[in-house]
Image 1 (cartoon, rainbow, N blue to C red):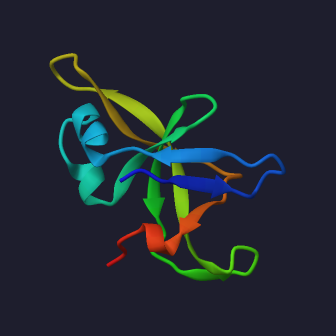
Image 2 (image 1 turned 90 degrees about the vertical axis):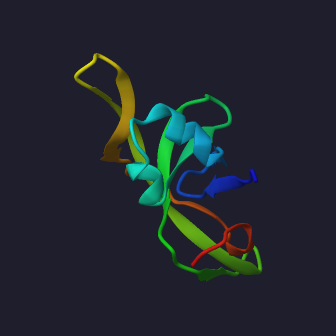
Length: 109
């Protein structure tokens, strides 16, 4: 399932598409990140990828008239294993992004 996150921390906004979990699993040496709840997000206008993790919250957004869930945003870092293979890893937490989507888009447990 694909849906979009909205960034209201900037005046121009930004749309980030959540990518299927197998894409992150294919780029990592194990499933540690996906088991921890991370997914790939891709900025629509640039194709830049970040790691996203839901905050597992639910808050009322009166302008949408609906509940929304927030996400933390992390840079994608790279690591090299002993065989010289480059893998994706969690980088620094990005500041200045307030990404969220309708809670109804998610299956929060």
